[in-house]
Image (spheres, rainbow, N blue to C red):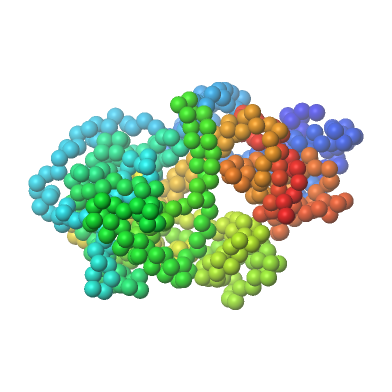
Length: 594
């Protein structure tokens, strides 16, 4: 039997019991039945069919994308567009070239990501002067003598935020200084139109597809050390309870004195290193104290903190993966994140007081149906919620704290994450459920997110320092478009990591790994290697028993043995097959963990 024959038969009948398929393709022995289940498993994994108990049902085909161009909300679709455009990197629906150096071009093509900038946008960027005009300097709050610095990853080049701090009688004055991209990129110019089409920058391990040309992203707008830069500063007076009692949002000019990295600052925060500059050392110590206060306050008030480790990969000069690992978040990263959250929250509150419509980052309550299985699973482990459904974020965070270190911690964390709605951009303020904020927006990354650039313009407009107007409909269209582009970026970056993870596992067939079940479906168990986070599939067809899938409990149960495999369960697996073309890793179970 062949895959094409099976798919063609199912297309003709639309649905069929598994027993009928066995008879149709003469699968009379275990070997042929296993082969058929493998084919059906592949078709389900690719979204062609789905299992409904013992029935195999064809799914309706999704509409394919029709153009490599990313349209802005104001663009009109071409009248005579083709329904399908063949990719130069594909042949019969599959990749033509499998060299590691071609992975990047493949991802850009498949996800329709624009890499080259239009000539008009490049010309506009090149025409921008490197020096700041004296007239502009005079109009801004001069903060160049303040102890201001950046803290970023070692390889970061688009430095769009800097920080400062002063101790006051009632607490602190925290300064968050953000690159003033809107000064260099007026609305409706070629650079602005291209940035809107992209929606955001795209990050791929060792390279970036930026939202702006390098002259802006790494030069003019990047807050590089020992250079005067134009910024929008949020100066917040924070009391000893972590409350913002007063704030100012002002156009400013700064001079970053240091370009610090997260590992550097982590050593200082832990007391292992002392900075030679006493002003810098004092600032970092004040920031450490304020960070802990803000973080504890935010968690107490209802922010949900999953705290998953981040998967990292190292590539060699040929774009081949040489190392995969899971990285713990540093306190230095949390510190900057906490300060950016406070600045974003403050700007959102400012906009909500000035206008009914703006650009907000919203996260709505989980849908009740999606949350049901999580609540049922939590109850099985003895965790009851004291309030209604959906529970407030405080209740969910309480549970995450209580299950730390328990065998089922990973299961409940994953189930809760999957029950959440996706955060998005919206022209109306709907609050942010996951963070527990009544007001939230994105203001702190205008070099790499179009949402932040829009917010900068809105802030300037309501401060009365710039005449920039947006209609409600325009904001709604932009919000919808950049939300879609954010999902494109997430999918593209995830697939790039997937390709590299499969390449990394080549030559490791037969090796055994400690893993955790990260997903359960009707065709198999997705397993994630604990040390690297690399994910693959254990096919149910390869197991000795016939396993029945239980969607509500994210588990499968053996019909004969009654053996249960459940999401979050520890297992030991052996790598069986590596398929770079299909981006598949196949494992088999060796033994179950405790």
